[in-house]
Image (cartoon, rainbow, N blue to C red; front, side, top):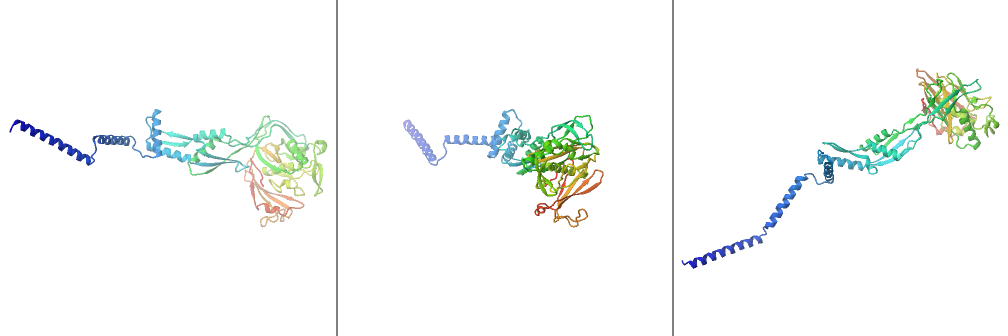
Length: 472
């Protein structure tokens, strides 16, 4: 074959091969096979997904995302050894639970079961939540120090603190017609000093429970009389308290009550083995010349007439209640002839009338130490506090009993209770095991028929020293 023919054939074969290749390429494109660029993009995308999966192998939940950011933050701060993201996620979950908690905190006192109510939540006080993170553990807890700070900064509870009085001197009485007195700076008062550490820890613990309410009692602390003399007066702690209320009294009667409390009963002293006389505290005749006002007094068993000192019996009644609560032997006492509504509160039927020259209120200090009596008023409330060295005796009062509420077989002075009488039973238990029982009866000209229905029968009131009080 000639050379030029061979060359022509080779050209035709090459062209055919090119056409074949182009045809195959066109068919492949028609079949939608990935292009080179598509292949590269798929490879890069898969690599990125693989890299993300390696870098974040945890569930794509909010708590895990927060936990991952927390872990990074901890590491940026130099904490290279941090808990795992799963551990941190559980801690984040516990924090969210704390943030959802709302708790009502009620602070109670002896006088008021709901003295202060404090509604708290971690959302309101976010600084109360503190992290506690170690190498292998993480949690969020309530911080008692932050709770304590909020409690103090916001003055959540407002209470009166205890007040101590300073005894500077004692002037002993000269005879049975006078009374021993002390010179005392101030009047001792019980009060409250909230235990902020206990309060804060109690609230913190409650957040980690399912409780929605918590009641925290505020412990009362007694005011004391501090003896600064050389005379051994014993331990002058509050032994017993008497209370009465003269709300509704006229100005003149209120004046006489306060004068008797603040000028005459106040700071009297009873030596061991001595007998206290209320009339001796009055320092002379009850007359206008001695500063007493004219107010109504009971005469002849049933007549109400103006006289100097009307209302003094409110003070003697309050003293009598303190004596009863302390468990001291009563030497002389008489109830009023008329039922007086002023004496209903804090011990109905426990009252004592006095009239200088004919009727007194007296009791025996049967302890081995001195007693100091302080008295005062807060508004219309009268208080008499007896301070001394408690000897372990306890007192319980049972009553009040009326003719319609007395237990079956109950006997007063060898008979049943009359319709115009109120009777209490006082039990005094001594530390040596001895027990003495007394009946405190009051007989009036008449009694309101509805009075007996206001009191539960056989009510027992414990008035154990050193703090005692008769309630309604």
